[in-house]
Image (cartoon, rainbow, N blue to C red):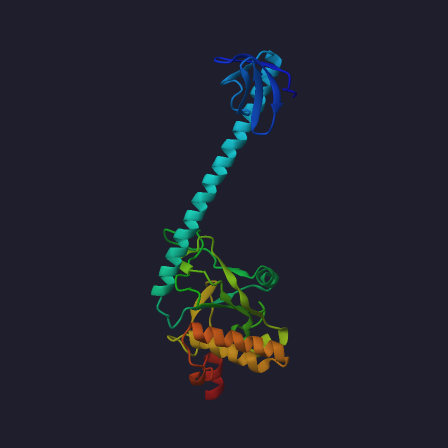
Length: 288
């Protein structure tokens, strides 16, 4: 659309001719001299094109520009609201972390099926499952004890094997800003650094029930329902310590040792005072 040389009228300056148009202003030569106006805002408001066909074209251009501006304003408003929500969440997160008291059982073990493994370890997140009853039936479980000091222990057993064969196949710290009670979608993301997937041989040597036991039924190995269960912090430290001893590659061994050190620091555990595992399988072996 060519506006240069088009005639326009102005209530004060009379009739003039467009002599230049840029992205932000339009210059018109009147009998009294040339004047600059905002483009395209002035057209149809202060300046009126004599050619009606061109005027209609300008009207359409203005409508498109106004829609773009409204969209930009809405996007800016959305960004401002998002930034506000992020600041609010960050402040709430900081407050929760500062007031958090280390629970003796703020770790969680997950039972995953063999076909889930690849997804869990490629996406590095695990689903908590959904509530089976109550007011929140069908909604994702919220594991309220989980804070940045928490680890997720990923376990599995083959369907045709007994429960005592349950193996640890992976361990990861939760993301540094994760708060269980604020998790709405049920997915627990892994820490960007402290995450381990065990090899097949390693997992066979770290059996879940060598570390875990039910305090009410210490001689029973049952996991009949539920996708997850809380674990004592000490048990996870014991698992990691065992994994350190299984590593032969110096770099891998150092990484797991760093993981263990980080875990103990976050959970205020003194490595020098860490006892030997005393899970159900271990107790049975000792008493046999």
